[in-house]
Length: 171
Image 1: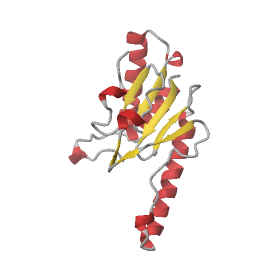
Image 2 (image 1 turned 180 degrees about the horizontal axis):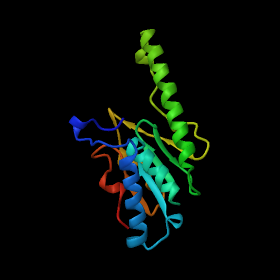
Image 3 (image 1 turned 135 degrees about the vertical axis):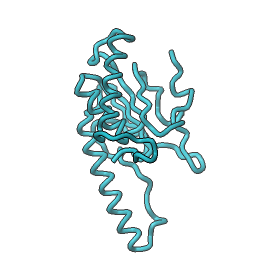
């Protein structure tokens, strides 16, 4: 798993970069925000290796993850009281496995054009789900991260150029 070496990846554990993100988040809380992790809210954009393992480690350190957005997740989930990172990780992996099995079956039946969009966050019981609004061939990430939700720290863990400038207004 993770980025292949030929594509700029590095040797190491799948979760290593996410754990590094969590350590930096902890330092930001302590040195810049002057707040304890358990008094800090986080939004995470992207739930691949970096985002998912970052969420898990931020939660272990006491951080309160209130918002997670992901392309394959199909949108954004939000709970102002906090999202259980372990439960959302398990839900996401289960939905991804189900979708992969469905895709194989649809390919076998030559019905691939009927495949539904990936919406791995849909049905997660620990947060409200907001589906992405598709715009032509893509998604308006700046609009759909739902950063209208107030958080202390935004973790940009999605693919490059995914965070629109208006998604992090800097107030």
